Every structure is written in C-alpha cells, then in structure tokens.
Image (cartoon, rainbow, N blue to C red; front, top):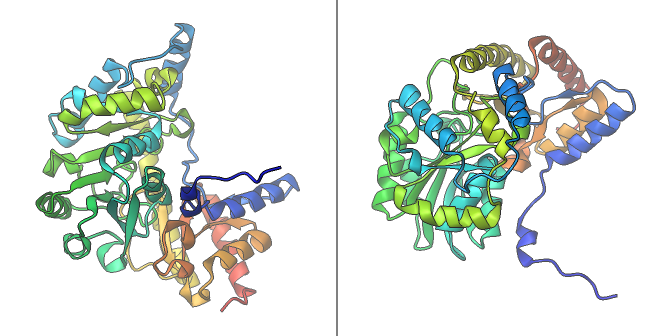
Length: 392
C-alpha cells in the first residue's frame, strides 16, 4: 500500500504540548486520582443563567437553521451597542462579523490579509494557534522575543526594527495569553501609528476583555478605528463550548469577509447566536462582573504564593486568568517539570514551549480558573513537588 502523504505545512503546525499533560491528567482521573487543573484556559464558571434561558427559548422556537454568513443582524447591533456603552466607540454594525469562536475570526483575517510567505509580527510568547492559522494560509508568524520589562508585549520600536519587505501585519493581544498583560491607550496608538506608517495592518486580539483587575482594558478601536479587532463570548461571558466570537473589520473588507465566511463555515451556530443576545443584558453583565472580582481575588492569592515558592513573576498581570512564571530556578526543562508535577502531585500546568521559543524551556503558565480553596490546595501540592524535584 502506498504511503499516505500529508501537506508539507503540517510539519510547521505543532501540537499543544500541554495536551500530553492533559492526557496524563485524564488517565490519573480515570484511576480515581484527584487532579487540579491549572493548564486549560477555560473558566470554571458555567454559562450565566440568562444566556441559558435565552438558548432554551430559542430552541423551543425552532431557531436551528442557517443564519446570514455575517451573523444575525440583531446580534451585530447588540455588539455595536455594547461598544458604545463600554468603550464610547460609535461602531457601525455592518463592520461586525459573527464567527465560530475567536478562532473563526482569526481564520478570516488570515485568509484575507496574508498571502504566501507573508509575515505577521507577534510577541514571543503568544497564543500558539495564531501563528498556526497563518501557516495554514501559507504565511508565517515572525516571533519577536519579549520579556517582563514590556509585559511580554511587542513595542512600536520592535515593530520598526523587525519590519521587512514581506511583513504585512502586526498581531497583538490585550489582555494577552499567556502573560495577562494589558496594553495602554498610548501603547496601542503607538503600535497602530507605526504599523500604518509601514504600510501594514494592526490586528488586536481582545478575547480577554472584561477580565481585568485594577484597570479597564482599552479597545484598539478607541485609538485606531481602522484596526482589526477580534473578540469572543468564551472567556468573559463563559460560553466556551458555544463556539461564538466576532470580528470588527474595516467596512470595505466586509464583502470579501462575507465571501470567505460563506465558503469556510456558512455561518456561526444559530442557537449560540440567539443565546448570546442575552449576554449584554444588565442581569448577565452583573454576573460577569461578580466573576471578574472572583478572578481578581484568585490572582491576588496565587501571585505571591507562587513567588514564595521560587517562581519569578516580575510582571503583575492586569488581565485574563494566567500567570506566566519564570521557572529557571528549577532548571531549563519546563516540560519535564510539568510532567513531574502531574505525575507526583496531580497538579496540571502548561509548559512554556506552547507559547513560543524565547526562553520557553524556563517558563510555565498557571491558569487560576479554580476557586480559592482549590488554588490553596494546588500551592501546597506544588510545594511538595518542588521539594523532591531533581531537575536543576
């Protein structure tokens, strides 16, 4: 039998290294062990009740067919109203495209803006799927090393320094995964101005907007109306499995994006769109704000606790629900350290290799998507695991 051949691009699309940790966690759980999950970026809160009620009503009404490729007009209008209410941005609903998760939005942007061998500048570390979407359309992510001094964010100076003839865009995230850092209005404006002057496009991932602590995240649209902004109902609104997000694009790009959406996925899930209409109600937003405060308390507990154990976290994250920790005090093989902690302490965390290459073996990511008693238990177990760790 002739050997099967896969597309060459697959060699550049890496699996999540954390999946090995997750697989091990599932095996341990199947054996009856109590595993504390700090590896997956999924809030432990369920979908808010008003959204659930809206979904039940939509299902009873038979809203299970296709919608327009750009999404339900009522949902696009609701999102535009939310931008006016939260950010003071007057946004034309026609610029909003409803997508299957934030990933669907990034897929559309990649297919529209990135040609063969084009490059998109992004921070190292960064969420890995972003660069893999670029590779899917025969483009490339150019990872630029960043550190705690910039909150692990790209600066305008770095964009200027690394921009080349094949560069077409800059992809930033605020709040960022894995660092949790938030870009200020001045930083976003500087990135936008520099990228525009160089002839490129600024794309900003705002999936963790709403989950900020001690500050409110600025939307790129407040300072750069021509930016491409993607967001999602997954994190702040607790709708991970509903697979629903949105993209705000320049108006002239919408017809081309509609054509791509029609071909890629026809439309985002109808039932999810109907449910999401309740996401912007006062009742839902009150629930989401209470959850934000719970995440704030978790960060304020876990950050000093991990520092006391020997992890270096010089940058205090202002958003998301992650701590990106320098684990070099325990060696340079963070994947092995993660495996040790899951095997011996049944605590699952993410190795830095998932987020790039710059000092990746010396970093790990902790997700604080569990309640305070569970986090306290995790810290206790990690301390025990570090006492018998021989990876230095």
